[in-house]
Length: 247
Length: 247
DNA sequence: CGCGGGGTTGATTGGATTCAATAGGCGTGG
DNA sequence: CCACGCCTATTGAATCCAATCAACCCCGCG
Image (cartoon, rainbow over the protein chains, first blue to last red):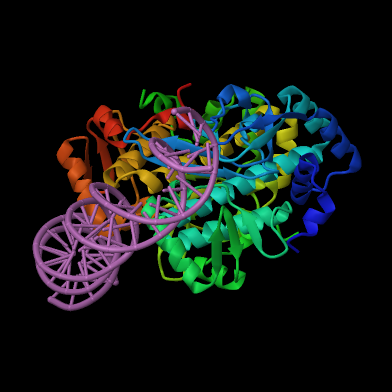
């Protein structure tokens, strides 16, 4: 299951994006071809590079790497609101013609694919399935946000971390970015993880240790190993239904 | 400003809904009329009534009252994810054909307006502005969710409560549900407020008291008085831009 | 008049932050 | 090639914000 997508996709990130979209809504060969022809592959962006909003005027897709949306508060505290993984739209503003008020930064070497907003509009008219897929992607993004609210509101530190690790496991599995042995790359520091789940760096560290001691996961050099997915989902109280990936 | 909408609207809740939609995207007289003809006014629902998901198969609009979406965790803890005020769509599943995994409950006597999903689909084709308005509403809903994430993640108890009171002030102002004297009805108990902002009932109580002592607000019998909006927004670190209401 | 829900208050507990210090990894530059 | 500095991970100790436990008051209502 974990490498099904991987073997199918090969390693072209545009194919990965098309595969991801197809999970939301099947796309015929014509629509896929149209997307292939319209998408422009951007340069490789180094980690910790902030993306300017003007760079978001096109429809942007993360082809490879890792991106976070976040807000910086006056007192220096930072909250990450969204994690963007390969195959995801960077921002859904194109659907409604608005721009987000959040900042946007890479945490790994990343490549962005762009489609001119106007060109995308034409494609959406020509291939309604493409539009539906994008809207479903936005809906899943919103569902992920609601789960984050629940985590931050009523889950314990261990549950929050277990939840986000589960979520990433399922999201990355869907695009073939998990290994058959049960691991995936997580290019975030513990400080960044804390900014995502609302915990201090120190507490993230201690809580991850306790998760490791349960045997559910192990960590090394930016890699997460899911040792016991059953146990991890149980610890998190996690139900992947909201990701709409069971297809 | 606060009663501009109110005087314009009179008190027909369907007009309030149309007014709210028009703030997202102007609607011509024809589109408004079509909506007026398609919408079915539901019965008055008592407080604390849970809405069944099947009741959400139509496009549902809150005409009057108050609705919360929430998740109940195994350990009895509850998190409210969304506050629905009059003029809002109850749920945006109709845009993508999915249903939310959350529960849904009234906290006040409420009336829901319904448009058959199929009928709404036709209207959306006939009046693209109506579709755009709905999509913008969904986008603002998502933006509100992101702000909640930020509140729960990095804001203090006082900031969270001040934020949500600000948010409601602006949202309710837009639909004429704030008084010229600077008050609005908040049909939520302190326990429910706590479930929304991730605080215990007791701490909500103490924090509201400290907000009152600053002179920014006062409370009585389900009414919130905004005594000093400047001070309140400053305490909250609140910027209403994300609500897209400046129009 | 008793009951229950919501609001308020005090005392205690506890989870998480903060402060502080150490260790390891990695790239840069001497 | 090694020294240095920086970033990340880790650990310990002290502190603090908020939760929990426990009363009590008020009020509307049966």
